[in-house]
Image (cartoon, rainbow, N blue to C red):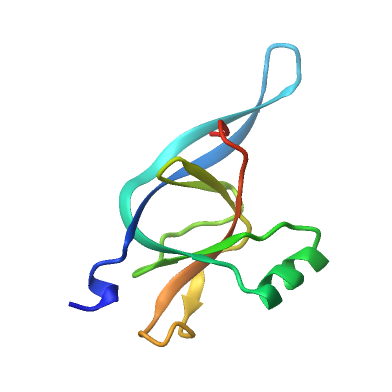
Length: 114
């Protein structure tokens, strides 16, 4: 069995929606998009971190999927007790040397978010 058949992590994706509260302030709500989806969490490389720093973003990890998860910047991912904000649209990536996987770049968030 290859790694592509049994990705080592499992995640939940939530869609973040910005609404207004009764006083006119902003409030985030989260709707579950999928749960129990196999993925592979990897630390981001130095060059990738620098690239995102130039955009004013703090990249910490990249998450791989065996098929397109349909994620964009409105989503958050949860793996175990960690919550991560998606920084990029999921796109195909052949650089892992194992075939085509779908990758999205994420930022590890403080505990208690989402």
